[in-house]
Length: 79
Image 1 (cartoon, one colour):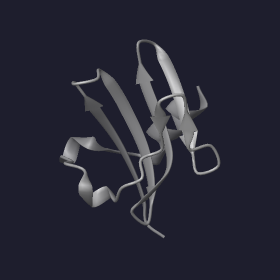
Image 2 (image 1 turned 135 degrees about the horizontal axis):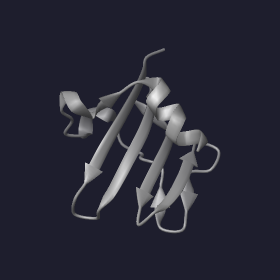
Image 3 (image 1 turned 45 degrees about the vertical axis):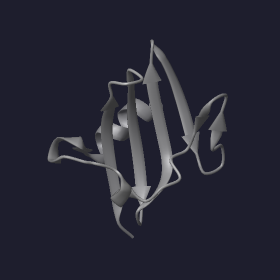
Image 4 (image 1 turned 90 degrees about the horizontal axis):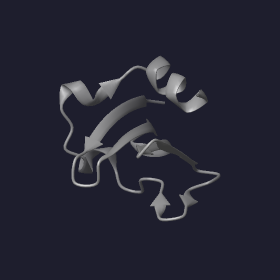
């Protein structure tokens, strides 16, 4: 099982996304904007207008700096 963690900033919406992928499928996601944090998971994939990423990781334009450690993801998830 391949676990990948990314952190991506989308300037168009001024949102930071943290996404945990397992075998190229998003299983957890954090959205941070305007001081608000939304946690999404396979058990809770929707909140208001937010939705757990439902595309393959290959569909994202990622750079080397977008990849983070599991520890960094977990730190934000738990706060």
